[in-house]
Amino acid sequence: MEEVRTNEDLMEQIANMNKDNSVCQVYIPGKGKFTIVLQEEDRDSIAADVRSNPNLKQMMKESLEAYHDGRSMSTSELMKSLSQKDFTK
Image (tube, rainbow, N blue to C red; front, side, top):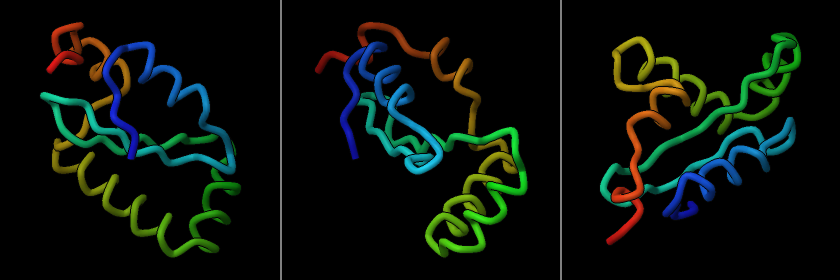
């Protein structure tokens, strides 16, 4: 898990995501731990990845539960909630 201290660090983590590296966990001091899941347009591709990877299946299940329970936020909401003071100790 990467510790993120600036908006640029967070954007770098997101920019490094791709089909093979589609889940990223980060820790933002003062906010907590976040799991970022890259979702592709091709739902069949995601379904195949989930079927072949039990860990990804569990993470997707937990992410969907968090979304339905209102315990998650979009990337836009996350970015709006952060300020420079969140990245200082």
